[in-house]
Length: 302
Image (cartoon, rainbow, N blue to C red; front, side, top):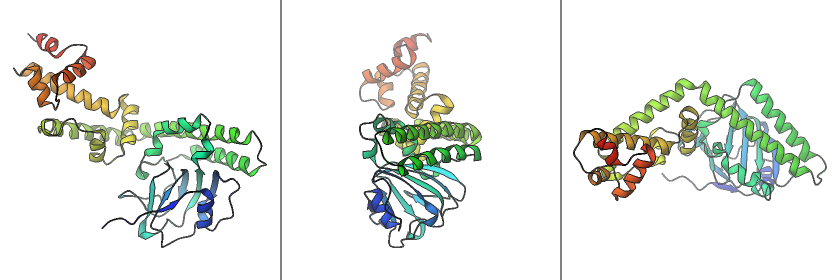
């Protein structure tokens, strides 16, 4: 059954009106207490035209795409403009505790953060990949958000935007730090992901999929591991120092070395078996990764 088209919310004023809240103090940035959310049973999903940072406790299960995630524990989540948030049981989530910070892209216009915010990969993570905060970490985040709230509630002057932008950058930097901490503290789970990654790649490379489908995409690998591509990339970089694409290339080179050292296939034949249309592209990648041409590598075994 096709999903119903989401309800689009274009402005912070509109979401205040939808939730039965007073008019926002600032048209482009705002923080709301989610404990008073009104339930709209006729709205099954929302699409927001602005950035959302939230810290929630004790909320209903949510759907992000087709994945369910239970927010009973306190956690922090991020959404960029254009992402869709769906509530379970055909409604916006209810019984929430915490806050939501809304940032319209126009607020960032003509500031360094307008470009830098796109570098924070966690804005593309799925809901199930949210950030679990310790009590100390939550206190730090809440303190920054209180500063932002206090600033836009004050009389607006020529420094207001600059002060809030600085606080937002601090908030995003702490989020980056806490995510990297989470990758480390959840080391067992993280290393299981590495094991699963190896299994997925080994199965793909050992079943002639390269010949028929070519090199797997990062999206394909992420789907197999039930992760968003950005989260998988961040996790691998933290654990191994390599991106998902680099892992794919390394696996490809290992397979190439195996064929070069154990078969009499020509370089062109090996390139074809590995999904390359042109042997020159294969040779270039091989030399980039090993500092040797395929023939030089083969000759080192003779």
